[in-house]
Image 1 (cartoon, rainbow, N blue to C red):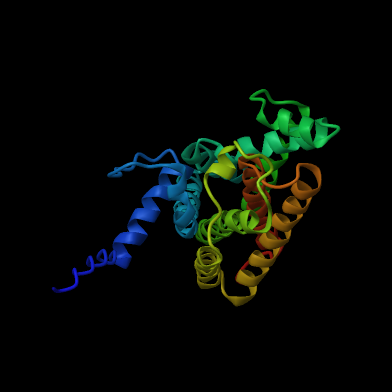
Image 2: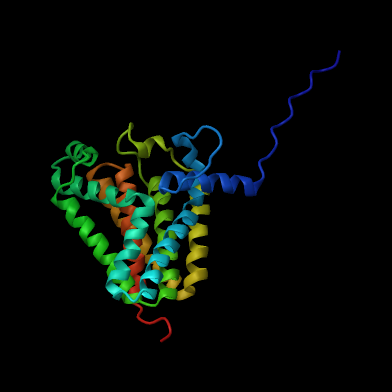
Length: 269
């Protein structure tokens, strides 16, 4: 009597096909771009797709730079061109991260204890703290773009800043515990360390390749420090991460990277 044959292992997925699937998942979760996706799409699909978020950030940054370039060609004032660049990125994402920032700041500023802060963050209404956070977020990003000025340099800066800021989100997840068990942040799952490493590596390649060693490292350091600061505040005040915390991490990292690049003056000096 012969032993039964063991079932054949499932075929390995083509790496390119796997990356394309993860890119589609990340685009669906983090933009308003219509994407054709076959099969069921649960929150757990994002667990591995985090590695593709720097590419999504690069697309968003390129769209913002395109809006800036078109406004520049139309001879609009540079300040308006910078505001249109920020508006284009917010439109493409449905202001997802801006909403998270405003909710997070509202909760931290208006709540006296952890439970009340989380309750405020879940409330769809926006308070004075949240309004001020959005004003400063838009103003700081537009001001940094205005300081960078040259359309080609704006393109490189926005792609790098958006890629780095998206990579900061899974890093925050890895370093924090879920603040609540029923939120979208917790349901999306915690990415493995190797996925986070891939995400950070891809963002670093984009930043260093586009900006050069010095400016790339400077933008990376600024984004990391800003994201770490938000994560530390979230750990202390709400006990971990939520979707709103991740939005605040992204916004802070993007702002910090752009400000660091704007502080360097002309890239041709």
